[in-house]
Length: 147
Image (spheres, rainbow, N blue to C red):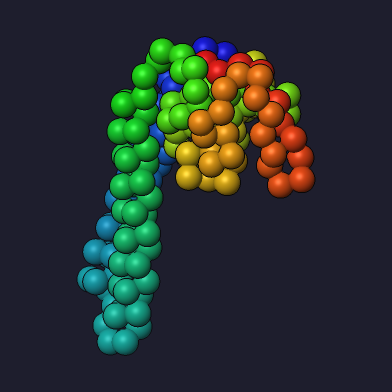
């Protein structure tokens, strides 16, 4: 898997996620407005407050996904000699993309864990080079390749 293809896959997944979140937010707005027309009293206020809280959570997720897209847009496609932001790291245990905390990405070529450089594994890998051995918890990991 080339880094360019991985980044494109992440962009597509983020765009899909953003679309779903925006649809959820639109549904919440619609629900809030219809509740406002048909309810009265404490029940109305509680329902509207719950919808408002869910809208704020959804907006937070939208903001986070937008920030992740911005980070992806800044990542260089040229391979790094030293692991850092934007590195695709192949180890003897797993493959990691240091960039955004997206979790496990299942691809035809294998699974890649998308993590931030501030994650525990990201901190261990950061600054290492190909053929280095790093210790994560009680296990040693050999870095095979950096893309």
